[in-house]
Length: 293
Length: 182
Image (cartoon, rainbow over all chains, first blue to last red; front, side):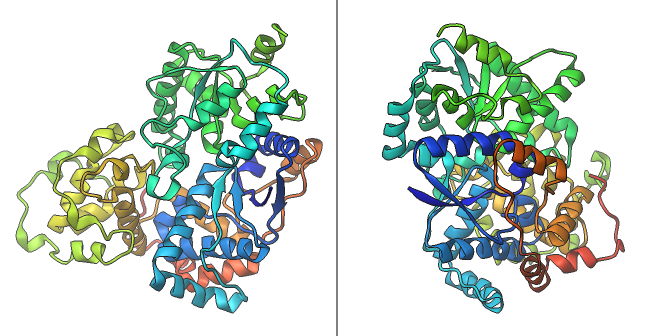
């Protein structure tokens, strides 16, 4: 399996542990991730809020680069995934917008058709090939580990764009987590926004939402939160420290990116999975797992 | 920028309403579903940022339908939307509320009402081609992890697009009107 690999900007700037672990897992599964030369920022919803035409044309340029490679594109970031998938959907279904976008791209020697598929890495891992291969290669059981699964909004919604899973009762990522032997626990805030998107406009609100999420996961007995989104990941790791000081409460609840958890089960060394880069240490998780094997 | 409750609670005079505002919104791609709203309030019931909003989502829709253009374009509520799309998902009338909000924010931007943080992000994408810059420190971190160098952005292409499609002109706008502090 081979995909154009849309890295985006938040991951290399703030979440390299995610990239490292995903590349390690991809290698184990013989999934080839090809960088996209010249790609820019996706761009995010903040740019969409300012100017729709600029947002869709930049996204379309990235999609046109992917189309030239003759591959489908995969993104680790829920935000990039939503932008590229949504833009692709609009270009496929709205001839007028597509024409306008192409009139700008033409001057850059590019054209977009909307012919390629946009996928999130979790979606790639869930397909039959990868899931079977994952199961075969998992040599370490993570029995006893209780995981609070957090999908992140843009992996699920809008569901007419994403179509990854049931937006009100998703199961696919829980299944991937449970392949390892770990238990995906029920927690009442599971499908709620992490608060990350409002961090730049209202930090207090963002921290309040993160606090509610952490309280809920902790109360449900989670040893860690697992997410496939860099923004949510930052919110649960780095911002957790701000939550702790704002509310004078201690959580010490580690966050893992999904491929980091899968990587543990594939017995990839924790250093290669970027475990040392977390602000909330992962030592306890490693202890729980290694303590029993 | 935000109005106090007392300032806002006054009789609505039809002479102060803009009857075309709703059609202006409905004519945009993002705002095309607004006229379907029947005010059930489901969008507001599930909103994760409701506690911080000056107006609830269904109120913004109703105010837009009424033609309270200035009040809608100037409220901080628009910029607090987390774009979680829960409202879109649950609306029984198929109103894409988050997208209507994009449309309203695009209009506010045209009036130079843009939160400072977002203007900075837009500056970044124009100057760097990305919203978050990868520093030498992170490049080193990537090298230690055995990760490849981040592909270089074709900045010229990005800038040409932003000049032709309107974002650049938003950045050029002087602070002639009041800017929100959020």
